[in-house]
Image (cartoon, rainbow, N blue to C red):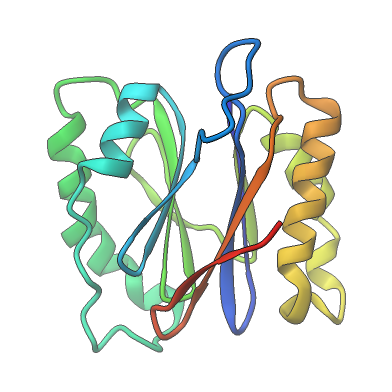
Length: 187
């Protein structure tokens, strides 16, 4: 199964995920985070829908006038330009998955009904989501959140893996910066 955590601060957003799969095995290369240009995509749910959202949707580059704007300024563009691309792929099937879409340091949650909500300053999806959310609930108030929220994401994944039998394996973590740069973090 899958647990995926996102955290956001003033300078970047992170996406962190385990590498467990739906079986008793752990596949050493089961990546739950896919990078498309400036986009980080993390999906939990039906494998078919996850594959479509991660490998088939042609995520567009955000327009230059959005770069550097507040998160709420992105909603209209996402609903107009990105959600229809997802809807076209899954309209003949049930959207039994949730997704994180992160670009330019902004984190968004796409629900099973294709709703768009903020995923800032943190959110989690998948089998260990409740455990990860509990771990993150008070950390956003710490004075060092903006500098170290990626470490809080790792601690949240550790809490999920300790108590959720479906959260397991190695962790992957990526950062998305306001200028569109994406880097993989060593975990």
